[in-house]
Length: 309
Image (cartoon, rainbow, N blue to C red; front, side, top):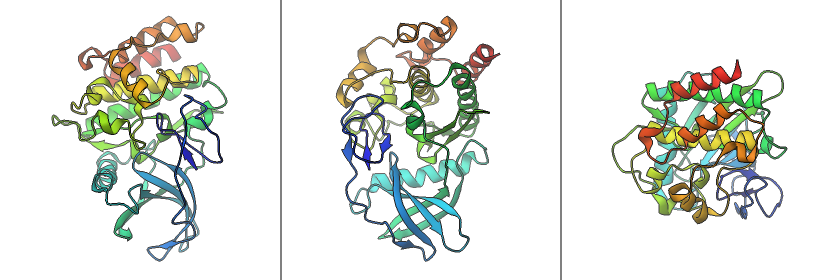
């Protein structure tokens, strides 16, 4: 299993570069848990992905026969308390935001289940993650607009409950775009907030493998607070990626960070000239360097709904 350091997408096999942004992939290393039984009734079948804070295993609940997903901190085998706290915060955020049919539900929380580490059991989603959808090309406009309306609505729901989609990114989304478009969001995008305190994961951590640099807003890179406006910026990067098939800013981690801070916002119709001008204008506002100039999720939802009608 390999992971992109820029967009945090994971891929089986041995491709040398991320098909979305061209970044060199890094190897997750040996699978330490495959075949192991956790908490007496969850058998780890295989590692099938990685998030910003956890490796994800397809697992079998031997009591019920259900296939589930087990999220084990990437700090497994190390002493990274920040990673463990981040996973705990994701569970708190989910509980504050649930129920919502777009959120992949948490089924069980196993305290100190793997050598002192908490393991979170969630529903196993068979729908492909967005990076695997985008590997075949951009999402069709009607499906992208429908997905965008759903994501904006979810952000409204989260923000009303003091929850952020702090690590919103392609790898945290599952997208069914054939037939009725449906989006689902993994818990590893969630965080409690907003907060006026500085981001505990400033720019230096944004360059490390456990952060998705492609979606970080300028104020967060500078170590500022995580806010709802930061979610809108990440949503802009995600929507641009869905519509064009590649990230808004290309390059390795340091290059992408520099572009978030200093480069002009990407112009949608320079990449995809057939897309509506109104959509280009909306994305430009969502990509504003200063948070106060970005639209709210409600404004984004209304604009996307009008374009979809």
